[in-house]
Image (cartoon, rainbow, N blue to C red):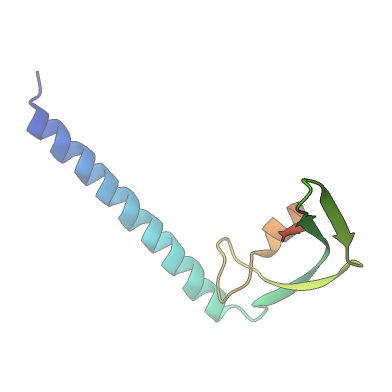
Length: 96
């Protein structure tokens, strides 16, 4: 039977390997994005404000659909969301 210390080392090494793997994936995605000729794309989204009032009611204020800049990558980079995510979630809610 394994001792507690051996199990703890195994779990810590596994967690460290996962963090390292995620960091390498993120860095590789960023490098691939910088080398790519089409870094940015546009997706049309419908945004609306969800305004919570003092009386407990919620008011919705819809904006007209408009283009939004996105990045052609797996993870968000450079302050923009990935295009694949915005295509799947074209309705954007802004809570006030």
